[in-house]
Image 1 (cartoon, rainbow, N blue to C red):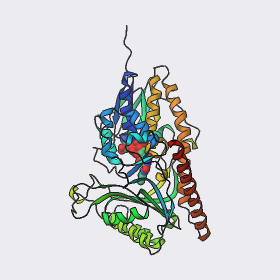
Image 2 (cartoon, rainbow, N blue to C red):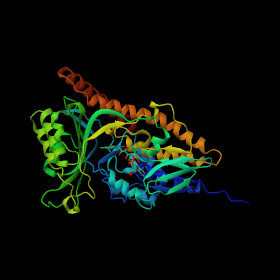
Image 3 (cartoon, rainbow, N blue to C red):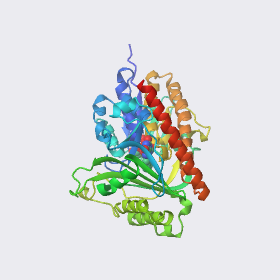
Image 4 (cartoon, protein in one colour):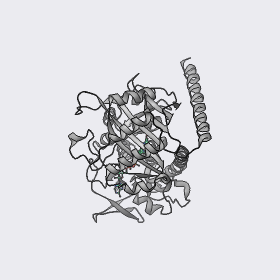
Length: 455
Ligand SMILES: Cc1cc2nc3c(=O)[nH]c(=O)nc-3n(C[C@H](O)[C@H](O)[C@H](O)COP(=O)(O)OP(=O)(O)OC[C@H]3O[C@@H](n4cnc5c(N)ncnc54)[C@H](O)[C@@H]3O)c2cc1C
């Protein structure tokens, strides 16, 4: 009897989505075996800064735990240490431009990553770069392999790489991020939607003296946002875990992600002096915008101090800077891709997961969660794979993915555009009132829900 050939899958992209998919396909080997290869354009795990704190929600963690083997799960602590009771509050706090609190939803604080998976609405601040490192363990990523395109044949897909090599597979998965060449070939009509918002992010070591003030204003919340009057938004995210072996031994410092977003139309003549290849000018630009758009107050001073901590040159010694690799900061355009904005999706042996299919604004913190859930959903759909039904498996995955992710893209877009719309005097009153009503409604709901669940 002739043995059935093991089908092959190629994943392009070793980011959070691609790596999770790799683990899931290998974990499910007993149920359905695939030969899986994963290719990444970067030259090594440290090639590019993978940083920032990201919030992982209950549904993302649920999928992650389903996809990864126990050995990888046991290392998740490194990327998402257990929340520290009474010190950290894993939730969002939104204040106005002076630091007056508008919205801080009470959400159930959990003990560890396993509890999050079973607690809807909970989330945990996670180190994105470390999560990627954890997911890379035991994955034979082929580095320095930039995919340039593919060709579908009768029985499979030929995948082309920049170095002139090619590979053949039965199914090709583009997990290659927002600028995915696979998406550009599969659905060329699908375009990035530009919000007209500029954003800038950096990771900085924040001293305890500043952290204490932020924690007081935001009631221990680890994810903090302020809304200005001109569509300008500041964001700060951190864990209250001191950076190990930091050069300043006198005072603990905390790794912190800071962000600043503003309507691009506010860039005026001064932006001509900004060179996105020169971080010193970008930092100066952010500080200038903050000074221009924010009132003179304690909160504005703190924001300026935080931006002053951003390196003005690329640190080349690890000793200089507490994070493994570092890419200098740049202004970036906020963009997304709504996968259902075109009706030309045709299911084939080539499919997409994560940002490649549905990049979304970071405002609601859904991108990585969705990339991980895509990996889970696709691996589940592929359990039914046979040579005759490969397309229907992918169709099952894509139908669900397109509908759900399009809704999240639009939700995140609407949140980003409304928080970045300049508002006048009356606008502020309306916005602040809406947020305060949301605050009360949410927290009453949380209180009642808690009472019921205790009975
Ligand atoms: C500031 C900021 C804050 C965010 N906060 C959150 C948050 O709180 N919660 C959340 O859930 N999400 C958040 N996100 C979004 C999240 O980081 C992304 O949605 C997530 O990383 C997407 O994963 P991915 O695997 O689809 O793509 P990526 O992580 O972008 O990985 C794609 C990989 O493909 C590789 N690649 C690209 N092109 C090629 C090629 N041609 N050949 C080979 N390899 C290629 C890339 O090098 C990369 O390694 C945030 C994003 C930003 C920018």
